[in-house]
Image (cartoon, rainbow over the protein chains, first blue to last red):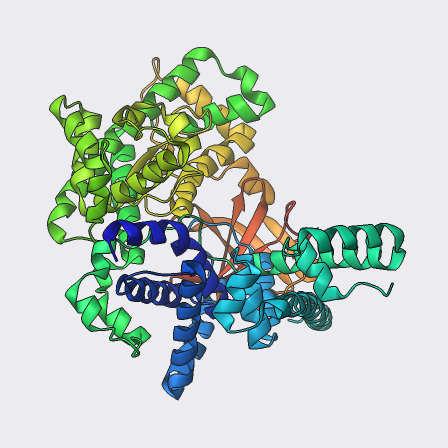
Length: 179
Length: 437
């Protein structure tokens, strides 16, 4: 692949791919590394047909392969999750405290994690602008099933979020005022 | 006709239904109340799920991608054989710590902090009051007491600060050139795209060097700025390609600071760019942008200082009076060397019942006393606070006033603020003021 072609791919897909992976992994550093690896693999391709679905599929598979690979990786993920939680409680040096936003992000993460893998990936890809054909190609599904998959994913995500949020409110209400 | 399938509705809302099927669906929806409600519900679910997913984002828009050349590095290629994806550890090992963007951001901010501090120290008139005056002029009714000479004095002083800071930042950035690249080199492909590159523009500026241009030129040659130029060029190139227009001329760099500020707020992040909010009535800030948030926060610091003073009528008036009497009286000691206990701080100090706050933090005291003694000065003034009854040592509490937000309370362990809570203001349930014991 020519430099100019890779440059074009970067311009078009780097940002959505990193965002997709960050939403998927909850780890910006890892997302960028996977994205870089994805473009590295694209570089080795002579031509790409359905380039967007190819990039998202390769990135998704890479994440899946690595996640399956070993227990060490999972422990690393747990560590990252812990760090993420700590970071949410540790406001940026000059920033405004935004506990509500951090709490909302944590709720969203739990809601997204509660989805089935296929539903989650389809939804994340749709949010990045992939059309049904591209999603179907990336996930190995039939195009006709994507609408049903997305409708189920959206409903479950919204319901799960509301449920977790309600639990959280009950919990806060129950412990409020302690100390 | 039976009611519409939910999957079909979502397919239609996503614009994936064929024209014929879409027409049939729309016709049915117009006559079927149930399906119309289903469609409304589907719209709501789509919007809700998008909102939920967006809340996961920590990725700022238009992140500067790593250069294409970095992908061609032998080490990078060797580490990723087909079918054997590199692990995160391999990736991290590949990327040295000083090449990480976080380090670049931290280094840039340190440069700004050092430069700004030095310049501010050199300017005996550059006190909090200098920042306060323009803020008051634009935001507070008390602005009427400011005369034009006071404003122009403040503006001139802040202009001078910004200019000097730019130069110093440029010098430091130039010196940093020898420490090696912070980010990978820019793609070679961009050179073939024609037009003026950022570096070429900087070189042309260097042909007629002014202090500001010299600083920019040095910055442009710094490793950090190389990535900045690459990003700028990518955007310029993308923009011109999209519009069929010529490359962005180098004269774009000469546009006014306020225009630049407005432009970069919606432009890609450019590591190492010198940013000046020159036309702002509220502040004059010079910084090297590492990330958008960092730069904005840096500006905010100045603004906060100004607004703090602006909000504190008595303190500001004192400062103004001091400045107006400077000609007749010996120069007053700079406020920054003796942080004043502002009227607003004094007014906010006292005891608060935090029971009304919704917090999951068990260590939050039920009541807190906000003292006026300065607990720490960086990045802004933090005053001491303590929970009572009984101090919760070794946990240290500090507080400060955040303009437009209210009183912020933080728990500190060592050098880290492990918890911050707004205890008053629009963004929080206001804690009840109670008499101190």
